[in-house]
Amino acid sequence: MRESIIQAIELANEGRREEAVGLLRLIVRRAPSEVAAWKWLAYYTSDPQEALRAVLQVLQLNPHDRWAQEAWPELEERARRAAAARSTRHRRRPVMAAALLVAITLVLIAITGLVLYAWFGVDSLLSLSSGLLEEPLPVTQEVGPASAGLAAQANPSTPPAISGVETTVSTHYYTFEASNLIGIQQALISQGPVVDGANEHGIAMTTYGIRVSWEMQPSETACELSAARVYLDIEYTYPRWIPTGSPRPALYDAWERFIRHVVEHEEHHGAIAQECAAELVQRIEELPPQPDCQMLEATLNALVDEVYNECEARQAAFDEAEGRTLFPLP
Image (cartoon, rainbow, N blue to C red; front, side, top):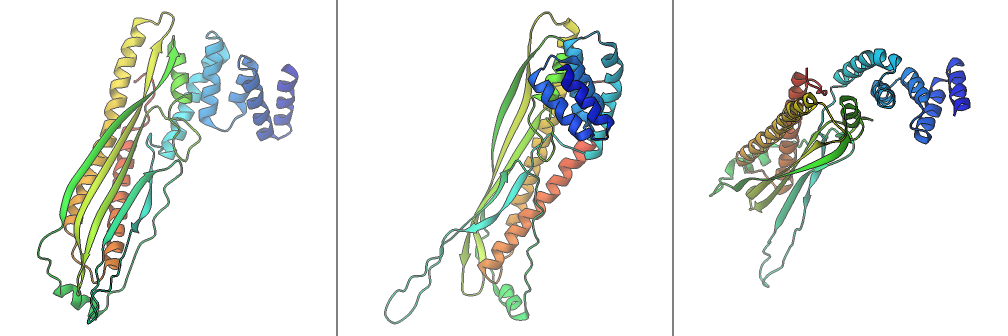
C-alpha cells in the first residue's frame, strides 16, 4: 500500500489531483486501517465533507494523532461553511406528477337522441424521489368572452365535498455502535439518510408526500368539482446510538440533548407540511367552476404546484434560520 500512496502523492504533485484522490479512495476501501492514506485523502480532496470524514477516521484509528487533532477543527468549520452555502436540508423533496384523467365514457342511449354520461376520476400525486425537484411548467389557457360568459352562468347547487386531510406518520431509524464522541460523529456523517441532490448523508430526514384525488361533474355550461380529498404521508428518519465499551457519562447526556433537538427540528418540518396540506384543502374549496373539465384540471394542477412551491420556500426558510446541526450541540 505504501507504493500506492507514494504514487498518489506523485500524481497530485504533477497536477493530477483528481486522479490522486481517486487512487486514495481505492486504497482506503481496500485497507480501511491505512492511516497515511486517510491523511492524504483529507489533504487532497476538494470535498469538505469527505475531508472531515477522513480526518475523523484517522482519529478513530489513532485518537492521539497530533496532525488529525490539529486539522479536525479547521476541516469541521470548512464543512460547516460549505453546507451553509448549499443550504442543504435534511429532507427529501417529492416530485410532482401531473393529474391523470382516468376515464371518459360516452354512451348512446335511445333512438331519438344522444345523452352524454361522463365519469371523471382525477388523481394528482406529489411522490418521493431520489432526484432534485423539477420546476413544473406553468399551465395557462386563454379564456375568451364566450367562455367567460359560460363560467359566469355556472351556479353550482352545492359546494364540493372536501374531506379534509388524511395524514399518516411513520418513523424509521438507522442504528450504529460507538464508544466515544468521534465514533458518534463519524457514524452521523457516513451512515445517515442520503440527501437528495447532494453526495452526502444527513443526520436525520423528514420525507413528506401529498396526494390529491378529486371528482369532476360536467354540465352543459361548465365543469365543477363534486368531491376532493387530500392525503399527507410523513416519514421521519432518525439516528439510534448503541453504546459500546465504557462511554463517559457526559456523552450520554450530550446525546440525549442532541437527539431531542433533532426530533424537534424534524417534527417542525412535518408541521409545516401539515399546514400546507390544510391550506391546499381550503384553496380547493374556493375553486370556482370552469368552462370545461380540461380547464378545471389545469387549474387544479396549477394550484397544487403553487401550494407546493410555497411550502418548499417555507421549509427552506426554516432550515436557513436553524442552520446545520452537529454533534455535540454548542
